[in-house]
Image 1 (tube, rainbow, N blue to C red):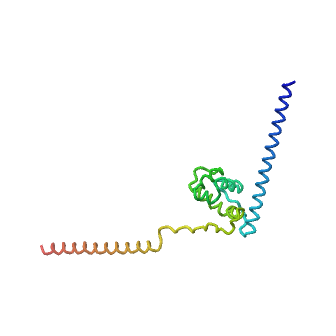
Image 2 (cartoon, one colour; image 1 turned 180 degrees about the horizontal axis):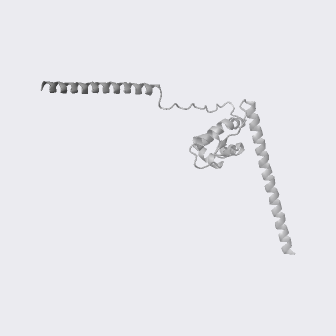
Image 3 (cartoon, rainbow, N blue to C red; image 1 turned 45 degrees about the vertical axis):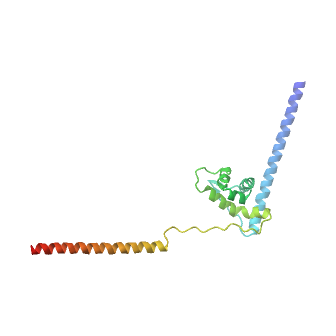
Length: 179
């Protein structure tokens, strides 16, 4: 009888634990849904709705997961200062071979989540990072001008050398004619 009571207690304890886990899981799902819904509403209200969630490392970005990962690491400013964007990318399950993972992760976060993070923290007045235009390739107008000038000088030298060679040939022929 004692043995059956012990197993009954264990069964009750196991089912209670399972119920707590389900409730906890449901709570997280509810929190995630509320977060994503609030995020979408906020971004729409500010005039930059999230119409399409981009992919990162062949997987669609989970906005809840990226937000939580960044928050666990101290928030946007901390992650940026400590250069932890690759770690965020890895936590999201990105492919390990990506060379631009950190930059892409940071840019997606800045566009999709950072305005909401600042809003939640009451930092609406803090400016968002500006996206810097890409630097032009090294071939700019100055280098084109320099390159054209070098070519002109080279052509001039070649002509001078050709004329000197021609003069030498002429001199060589005139000496032969005299001889």
